Length: 413
Length: 174
Image (cartoon, rainbow over all chains, first blue to last red):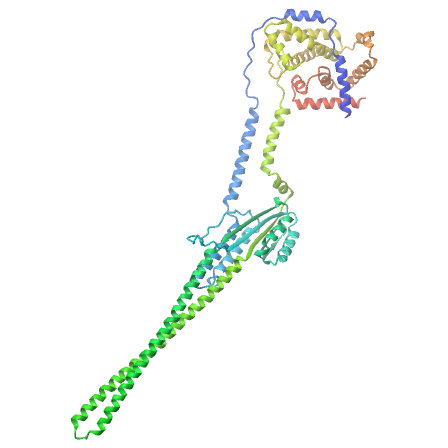
């Protein structure tokens, strides 16, 4: 302010100090008289003035860009532990259910869920120290291939993860757990240390949207990254339905065949008994005739005895056949009963799988990771470091070009 | 006079147009002479150096490159160099001489201005020669920071800072 006033005073002084010499005309004439036309001056070519800027800035920028590219490449090329964990879970669960359904076994019985848990725990351990941002690519959907396009039902299984950066990991960890429980959620896994925390949990699907809304309201937009994945488990559902239909029809067939077998056996049994009764009756008639023949008529007696023996033999054969048939029938019935029982168990298991699928679809699996953030990284979230550097470089160059350059040296005669 | 107008006159002068040189003289000499008188404190010496400066300028006009440099700035640079050469020869003996013209009745029209002038001359004497120089170039010769930078062969930002510091020193000496 005061400098401005003094500058004004100096400006006035400067105006007044301007003057022409007393011998103005005399000196002017001397100068003009000595003035004559001179040949055109051809200036020497000077080396490129900005070469040192080019020589320093361009390699520096190139190195920086190379470093930046290399850094990003490394991040992208390393598959995120969390994403591996996430997709491994979905796929192995689905495989377990799928293969289990095909064999009439639950996912638990296949043992794949245990393997999944193991993979999850390993992945959790790997991902704990430094969680990387999840790469949001859709997992391959093995179950929707070859599906009937006219079936438009949706059995969406939603999984999501929040990557949150915060200055207060412990406090936020507690707060988030309270919120999850407030939404009827179930916490399955929770880790906390000074600079990192994670929570794995399950929420009812109906509360999912409200939950996301509440969590995103707590943290600024830049500090939270949401990854959500929804997969239609229609293929799994259709598979269970196909299996159920097949098992039901097989069961019906077995039951009908069993009834037919019993009926056939009963018919055969009654026919055999009837035949045996007829043979016994004929044998009795022959025995009565034998009593009326005297013992001297040996030839007649022998003939009747032969007939009786023949009938007895036939009777015995029929009786044996009947016994064999009854034994076989008993085995057949046992076989039918076993098959029916198997199919009924199969149907019960498929029913359970269907219930599990519906429950699975009606819940949302989530993971929240909290990571401590430094003040520098907070600034970096809003103005990325790379941008700052580029702006800084550009600023230096502009500043230099505007103010820093040494003025052109004036030629002095 | 704008840079372009000055440049046009220089172009004409290079073709041998004496009128152009005359016009340049009329515009630049008051500032240049004022600067020399204020710097050398000797009107006779100022006359000599003014003449020498102009002679060197007109004889070397063909070597003057107008790209980014004003002719007046070039002229001041020559004058400054002449002053330095003179001081080198005479071990920087500055002759303090009463400016008679300032005591004439014509120049007493505005007494306040005279007081200002005396006051500021004294003020300038109290600050280093380097600062005096830059204030003369800024306020007497009315050069921009860029032109001052060209004359003194320093970066424009340094010229700006030096002017600011010189004003601060002058203020401190009030």
